[in-house]
Amino acid sequence: MDKVEIYYFSGSGNSFAVARDVAIRLNAVLTPIMSMINQESIETDANVIGLVFPIYDFKPPQFMEKFICKIKNIQSKYIFAFCTYGIAPSKSLKHLEKTINSCGGNLSAGFAVGMPQNGLGSGKVTQVQKEMMFNEWKNRIDEVCASIKNKKTEEIDTSILFFNILKPQILKMIPVYLAFTKQILFKGIDSLALTSNENCTGCGTCEKICTQNNIEIINNKPSWLDNCINCFACLNWCPNGAINPGDADLSIKNYHHPDVKISDMIIPKK
Ligand SMILES: Cc1cc2nc3c(=O)[nH]c(=O)nc-3n(C[C@H](O)[C@H](O)[C@H](O)COP(=O)(O)O)c2cc1C
Image 1 (cartoon, rainbow, N blue to C red):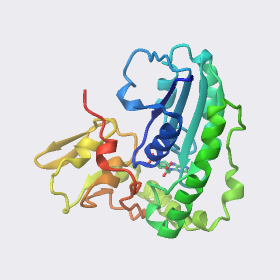
Image 2 (image 1 turned 180 degrees about the horizontal axis):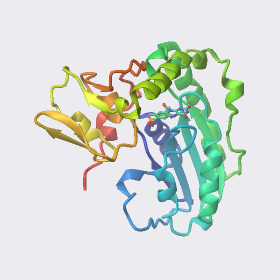
Image 3 (image 1 turned 30 degrees about the horizontal axis):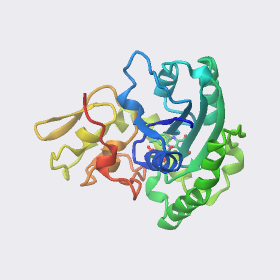
Image 4 (image 1 turned 135 degrees about the vertical axis):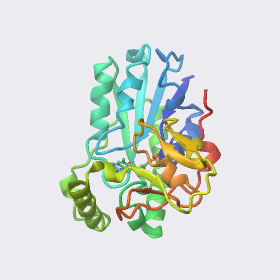
């Protein structure tokens, strides 16, 4: 009987929802990556390992590399991965494969799952589009889980951005990317730092949800330290919509996966 362990990272719940769906079907242990990232090494007797994460800027988040190379006996494990993406999976899973190879392991199967965008332009995604993405995933879960159960080697999902560019949901994002580029060129990247506005009640949700312990509530307002990875968990889970990236209008709306609760996301502080 295979022992399966799934390590996941999630800012707004999309990757958590995918990890949980897969864990239920594979009877796997579900572990947040951030609860283990500072361990010297990761030892597990699981012979099947799953990695689930969102794409950031066409790649897996940077900390994935640090995490993967800590896994002991990685060469003896069957490894599968899911990336969730808002626009296009690009070559993220290929990047992940390279990292796993460099640590001595192999990526046997890599699946890309389209989920609502949680960053730039999230406000442009309609409810109909969101439902389509959720349904597409629901229709695919059993097939991919059966493949993992049989420890099959699958072709790794990739996409070429050029061929996605004419999709309506991508065309809708173009004004957002132009506004983003203009903001950086004319006001500098620091002008996009996260801040709270007058709707902030100092409730502390952002401090609890921050995946990096990077927020402190000082004088009833959040204060960001210098370890932000831009997962947008604070912005997306703020119950008052009180967090913005500076004064730019980048159509970022509070989004989180509808079937994920804030209590699912909070990693107990050590
Ligand atoms: C900083 C940042 C960068 C992102 N970059 C990409 C990207 O390059 N391509 C893409 O398709 N989606 C991108 N996204 C969207 C997320 O990958 C997507 O919404 C994902 O499902 C979020 O998962 P989570 O809820 O588990 O955090 C980005 C999101 C953020 C916050």
